[in-house]
Image (cartoon, rainbow, N blue to C red; front, top):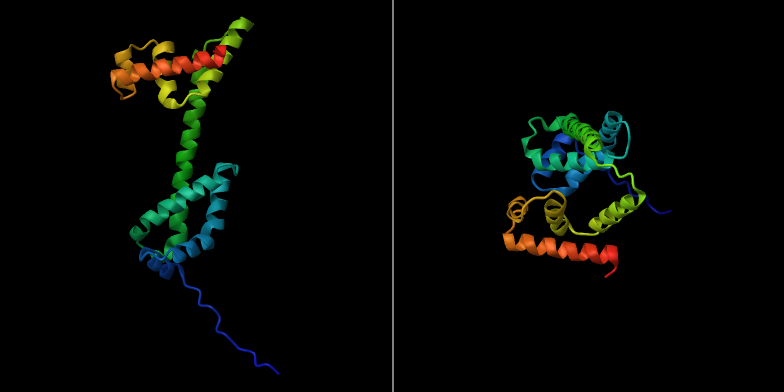
Length: 184
């Protein structure tokens, strides 16, 4: 009959020990802290946000913040409430951003021009479709100059480029837009 070996049960480190190890650069220790507390923190975040669309982002941000500030944790045995507070602060920022975004969308609706002529609406749609294909380095100066009416020197200042670069980018954007809309 084969002899059965009795291995000792693995020792499960407490949070204070894991925090100390993680502060010394032990990634495995921090990963253990994450696995131990992620479910709880995710539950808090989910209940605060009211949906799960942003839970992963907030969790990632909160645990990255925690990893960066781990050495400042005064009571290493209090890792769970500490990381939860970090997540709650992240949720507050998200909710504030949502509010500002909703306000901005509402304000934009008030000033957005409406187009009643179907042909003009089609041209505007084609223009915005063409603009969406441009990289920001071309799109921004073109819009500032052509649509917003900024002078070339003002565009250069707003885009933090030289006047020559602003002119070149506006010209390149114009060429791409013409090619996209007119196929030439």
